[in-house]
Length: 359
Ligand code: ATP
Ligand code: MG
Image 1: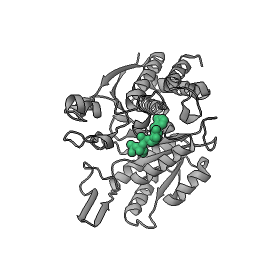
Image 2: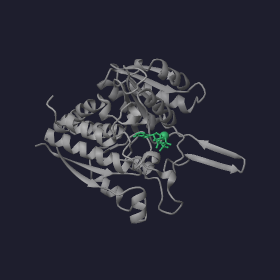
Image 3: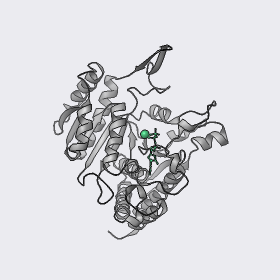
Image 4: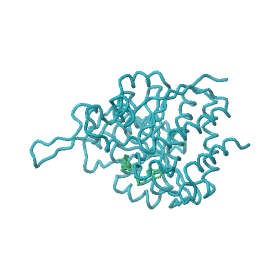
C-alpha cells in the first residue's frame, strides 16, 4: 500500500451538490481498485456554509485545506448570494492563498457526443491570479474604479514573475505532451502588458529547447480554434483571454459539461475545479453532466501521483479515464447535453462499471 493522499471535498453550490459527490464516489472506486489510500475531509463552503455557519468561507477553512494534498472545489454560485456580510466568493481567495497561478484546462474530442471535430486534443493554460479580474484580494491596484459617475477604469495587472510562473507550468506540460507551446496575447495593442507576458514566456522557454514555441494574436486564436483546433498542443495565455478561449474550446467538444480544469502552483497543493459555473437552471434535476468535475478530479489524482511519486494515484487516474471512455461511448450512459439519453446517475454508474471492468 502506498502512502495516503489527503483530499478535501468542497461541494460548492447548485449542481456542485451532485457532481462533487459523484466525483468523490468515482475517485473512491478507482482508488480502491488501484490500491490507493485516500483520506477525505469534507470542508463546508458556499451557500450552505453561509446558511449554517454564517460565512461562505468559514473561519479555519484555509488552515484545514493547508493540511491537505489537494481538494475538489465544486462550482460557486456567488452571483446569487444575498448581499450580506460573510457572503463572499471564496474562489479568488483560495487561488491567491495557495498561489494556484496556473489553471490547466484540457479540451479533447470524443466520438458521437457532438464534437465539431474528432481530432482535438489541446490544453489551455490560463494565468489565474493576475489580469483584469476585479478580485478584491488580488495584488494591490487590480480591480475596477469609477472616479466619476460617468467613467470607469479597469486595471489589468501583468507581472514578470506571474508570467514566468505560468509559462513554466505550460512548458512543463508541453514537454510531457507533444512538445508544442503557443503563446496567445495581443502585444500589438497592449505593448507593455502583453509585451511583458510574451517576453517572460520566451525567457523561460529558453530553458526548454525541446519545446517548439510559437505565438498567435488572441483574435486570430478565436478564429483558429474554430477552423483548425487540431493543430494546437499546449496554449498559454493571460487570465481573461484564457477565460474566454476555454469556453470557446469547450464549445468545440460538446459544451461546458466537457470542460475540466486543474489549478496548480509551485506548492504541493492542487485544486480540481471544472470550468463551468454552478448551473442553477439544471440543479437538483439529475441532469448535469458530471464529466468536467470527474475529469478535474482525475487530473488532480494524476498530478499528485506524478508530483509526489505515488504510482497508485496515477493508476487510479488511468482507471477513471477508462471508466469515462466507457460511459461516453453509449447514449444511454451520457447526459443530454452530449447527445445522450441518460441521467447523471446513468453516467456515473457507467463510469463505475468501466472502472471495474477488466482492461
Ligand atoms: P460562471 O460565471 O460561474 O462561469 P455561467 O454564467 O458561465 O457561470 P454556468 O453555470 O457555467 O454559467 O452555465 C451556463 C450554461 O451551461 C447553463 O445553461 C447550464 O445549464 C450549462 N451547464 C453548465 N455546466 C453544465 C454541466 N456540467 N452539465 C450540463 N450543462 C451545464
Ligand atoms: Mg462562465
